[in-house]
Length: 80
Image 1: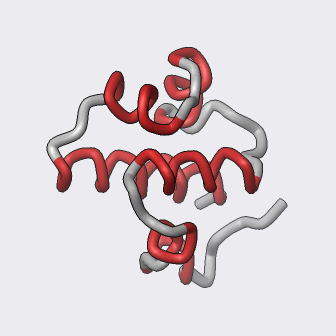
Image 2 (image 1 turned 180 degrees about the horizontal axis):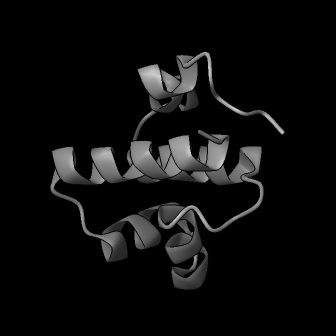
């Protein structure tokens, strides 16, 4: 699993648990629709710190809260 996959899975999980639509997350995070589509489909080659920060802000949480998930603790998480 790549970091991009983990970010996509975490984002989808949070959207579901908060009953949030993609449109609402785009509005709250400031991430454009096309970019959000690529994030959610794990089509980006890299995900930036800024993007993760914006996602966290869109969920009204800290960066630490966003990455505080077992997805980011996996031994097989690819960092390249």
